[in-house]
Amino acid sequence: MNMQSVIAQNAELPGRGVLHDPANRFEPHHAEAFDDGWNTLAETAPPAQTVLIRDASRSILSWNESPDLGFDRGLNPYRGCEHGCVYCYARPSHAYLGFSPGLDFETKLIFKPDAASLLERELSRKAYKPAPIMLGSNTDPYQPVERQLRLTRAVLEVLDRFNHPVTIVTKSAGVLRDVDILQRMAARNLARVHLSITTLDPRLARAMEPRAATPVRRLQAIAGLAAAKIPVGVFASPMIPGLNDAELEKILRESSRAGALYANAILLRLPLEVRDLMTDWLNRIVPDRAGRILALIREVRGGQLNDSAFGRRFTGQGPYAALLTARFQRASRQYGLERTPPPLDCALFTRPTAAKPASAQLSLFDD
Image 1: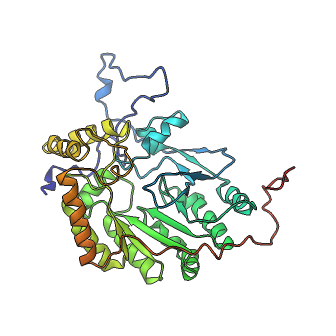
Image 2 (image 1 turned 90 degrees about the horizontal axis):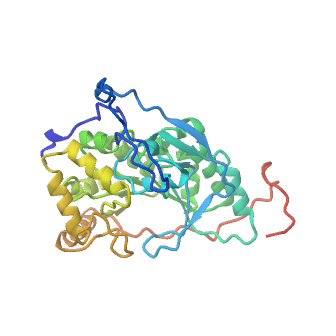
Image 3 (image 1 turned 90 degrees about the vertical axis):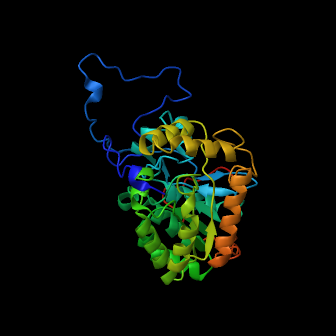
């Protein structure tokens, strides 16, 4: 791969994955930039500042019945993600909050200050039945703001007290901060972590995932977790035909050397607004190969840029997709990486006898 054509950083909006905000599909009106003759649109844009907005939700778990996901419940302390991954399938969810899936997704972050207490209330319900919670099922639980807000750590403390199993997916080496909790839980077969590694090329990573940890730091995180005897895997995802898929075997090899036990790989998904954002990004960042990459994406997606059908959305279809799957399976065997980790232990779940959290309110009905 000739990476000389890759731009290491977006010079117009440093540290951001996209340049603009596409129209919110739920809004009847939208604004567009207009040059009034003073050539103001050509001026360098000021840095896009991150804004934190409190979430007032009174529930914390999100549930799904998808047949191709390995979990039925997830928890996301944050909506939106400052990592700014241009390809992120979660971007369209920001439209439900009245924001754009573009720059708003990276800069207008919704945080849930009551995440831990809401979780404790949910787990304390008599009707609750335990199963592994996916922490970071939509957005990264260890994005930069977690250093200050520590919402993910508070959630882990609750899960630790309840002996509740958890799996984590992240692109951040910040997960190492919570090794003490994860190590205790892992010793009881209650915790597992996956690091998402899309590329080992730092220039491509900076362009695609501007505020995520560097590839080297993610490998170091795998090594740190493995040294602490915390089961850890790698998600070589998303695989983007013609852009990073040539690195698949190398990602699996280096992750295995670092201590990863499990591996998975998912094909690029481009739902709703992400299609246009990714197309624009490719034309700006790799203009010499954008047409070829988009053609390959259409090839594995039945002629479209996206296919949301269960059973195909993660793997694609056609010869190119089948070859990618075969390469993944062969490399996984070669480097001793399991596709399906052993189940976490749900039998240890217990409700502590300590008093209910201060934020909990008495109910007329005992559920």
